[in-house]
Length: 500
Image (cartoon, rainbow, N blue to C red; front, top):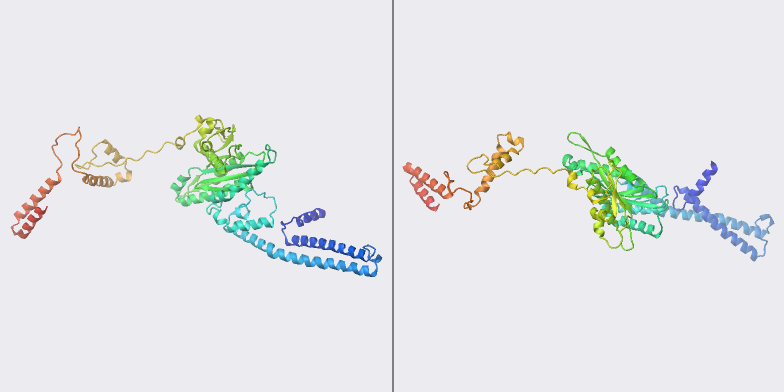
């Protein structure tokens, strides 16, 4: 037991740049300084003994007085120089490297409990597929410090996941490096080789959550979704908020591994953990998601190359299949025949009909019920899946000028379609609508072209503006005649009539 502990201590001491304790650092530096000084002093003792023609031995009893004095001088020199070098180097290491790094780690631990994303605390910004079992060197810790200082532009404040700025400024370079590393191996996939997957996750009916419960509840759902996705992926990948209710997940694993297990885990976690609570009555609404994913790289040839954005478009297309075929499920895009010769990359990445018709790929799902898509005839329109659209409300038509009753059946339907609250209030809204329409009809031109089917004459024609003015003038003249004391008022009335 003690031997095992000693071996573990020795391994920990010689794990350069990954020391957990300052004592490990001190022992390592002291050992290196002692060995270096000892070697140089032995070389010096042997050299001086040869020059003075002394017998070379390390036993003081067999040495002459002068050689023994020289021997003990080198022994004291080794001890004193080792201590001085160890103290100096350890002090420099502590001030320049160890103290700032430990202070940074303490700050990160405090911030991670309060406001900082766990991605920054784990150092996932520069190393998204980091092995959790590997020890963090002081160089890694310095990189974490640099990442934390620039974290604001790479972290989504609401969900704690990475944002699109991180995706296109940093992560593209990481994935390109991984792709080149796989290409350089020049061989088929072997056991324990690194494999990657890109997933697109979309929250089902999220707009309805915002409309029914409010945007504050929608934000709470997004926060919970970000946390659930990070827990589902764990140390095997990262989560990026692609915008709105869409999230991207990049996973890493060792061959052979089926990423459908991750997709199943995400669908199950949504059903069990993600929900929206109404702020009005406290009712609960369960929330599901649609997932689409594919392996990265999906396909590559000598004459073409799919970019990271092309892979994201393919994952989005697979997610669209999950949306249109029932939601709360996942679809994996699988390669069937590798493209040869010239083909349209844009349609290949965005048009499922193009790829299915030419047998490039197909969509596979193990969700219940199992619905693999191998032919364009199996595609479902998004509108059909959404259900029939709600009928649009009819607009109220202008009421006739003669009375307030609807003139035909269409007007009666309009009044009938009004809400019940408006019908039971003594028809106030009905009258208001008709008055507004009447005003618009009054502003219309008086001379309209008569319809061919309209009657030539009417028993009660509507009086024109001119006849109305004549009647008004006669009424005022009659009133002035009945009042002989009007005098000046009568003359003024005549003047007004002339002006009119």
